[in-house]
Image (cartoon, rainbow, N blue to C red; front, side):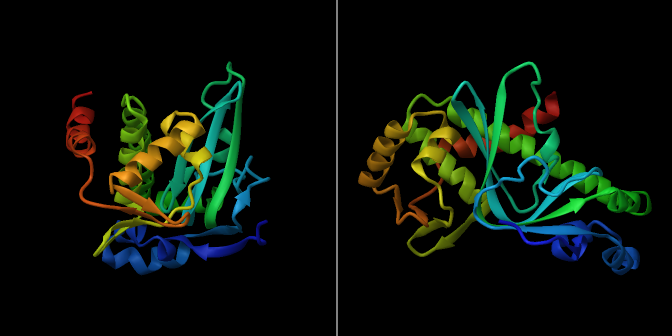
Length: 245
């Protein structure tokens, strides 16, 4: 279920974009850069083909969390999408010659802004925004490259442990008893994210729990200790390798 669109001030909702504008022009930019916003309630998203996108730059996630699943012949990969991510929902298929199916699932109440053609016109006035939005798109590809590195780990328990820490780097909160990740991730979704079968994921999570590395109540994941060394090494080497290409 979604609520009727209304207008929002995009730079007020996303302060990082506002910070890109010099102070002498920032207040004006904040007032001028508006876009239709759409609220989407948790559950399967029947309007997954557009998410309010009708031309322009794309759709900016202001708050919330969603899962994008792409499948071929009943086997799926998945991507976690949240605050700050930039999408072009009806142009997400990158392999038109393959029989792909795409499903969107809203995990937390989600609010998106459709950066339409009206918003697009403001880019000419505030070119700094273009750099920021391109950086957002590149960051999404970097997150996917980390996911690819994770799914190539041989053991499923290692994949899950690394994935949870990867997600915690963005959405986690440090607490006295560990790093808390508030995400409602079913074993089926985790299986898609780590390229494994659901029963295998259930067994691997039990092993991580037995070792005291992860515990969950279904709503929150608590990660003990520090992030896996492999993930830390990849995060350090990734920017350098990207610069070499």
